[in-house]
Image (cartoon, rainbow, N blue to C red; front, side, top):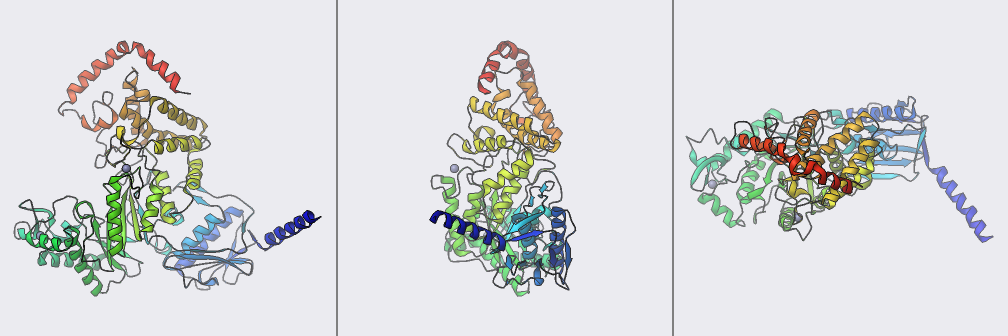
Length: 632
Ligand SMILES: [Zn+2]
Ligand SMILES: [Zn+2]
């Protein structure tokens, strides 16, 4: 009897709870302010168009909308006064839903996140948006979601193809202005004015003054060089100030939430070693960042005095300037971008067993202690061998968490910016993973990745998930580390049997793909696996296989067909002229152009080897036996 009573009570409770939850359907309206701002109009129209599509009916929108309604912006009654800039609040009150936001984009983001979290809309790529067609969806009666951005600046250049990326960026939280354009009503982007990086040579006009004022140039190893300026020379500082103010006069937008001028060292190690620079550095920890910071602080002061309140001056902690100085701190309006170029990417940055990363972690802590506006420039591809797999999937999320936990305010995840057309690897997946982690470093990334893979690759997506997991668990060189310039042989370690297993996973994924788009996605991403094998003579590229020469040519043609024309950073299409495609491992394709030393000889011996390989391998008999064993 007791059990029965408690069961009835339980059912009553569930029914009561269910009754008080909201069921949003086509009868609901959108309530807007009588005179909406451009942000409010954009947010309300986005809500209206998506809900109308989901419900298959035209959802009404007006200033005097009757309950039940979703109120947007100042038409809502939710209190956002305590919500940080560009954050939002979604709250249920009196049976209606209220969405409010702060800053230039909080409200719009709030609407996108409402559509994702409650309506199930996922924007996976520029081409793939999933929207469940439904009669209704449920919103809990006690819903009160407050979101505040984890980072003020989020940027990555990852992409595959060149589709417009504004909708993807709004849905998934990317607001850097270097690789996307968002309209004013969307809230705009955070832009670097003048240049994104390595700007100091231009700002100090080193080329212009090299004859008349060699003392303006860096003194490196006893010689003046235009590679960097001398940062202790007061005239150089004046030149840089003048040029920064000129950039602001030209490009500054007072309505933007934040704009940045980059004052960053050129991309070389030729910093100034003059007496004045050395003396200041010796007094401040013996590091080159000291003179840089003094220089940048002075510029930041001038910019502030000129009234540019929404502008920050950015500099690097990069290579020789990575270590933080002592006795000098960045101004409030100075951004320090710490760069992880030397790091290992199969160990998390805070892995105490990875010596390459422990040094960076110390620098991160030191900068975090003295800099309120610390940004990160992070690296997420293999810059020397772009077409191969870069198995860093296991650290992307943890590293972004580490940045957040060390008070980092902005993150740029550098990827395949130098690609002219298409990516041979997982460009779209990386873009999605990075965006989701920057939006919320503690998101359920596994679930996000699974959802993406299913939408992108079709019914066989689990095979690709398994392949990616195997890449991750076998990442690194023989010592277990992974750098961003590694050859295929140092990026992953697999036995022939494991290679056979991964081949089967790709074959199964290809077979299960249904649409033309899914088939293309599988084939394109598999290029990176084939490239890795062609870099290490495994699988069909085995030295036991007399067909390996033709397989290399086939891979080459497929890369071309997909438009994956870039083999390395700065190496656009440089392998298209290779005359030894069939005769060298894929990672060496850019080394054998016609007319270059060794190319003709390599071609001659390659042809000879191709001719005799069937004899040397007994017609590939052993290869075929091995393949039968390795494949299932
Ligand atoms: Zn100097
Ligand atoms: Zn490592």
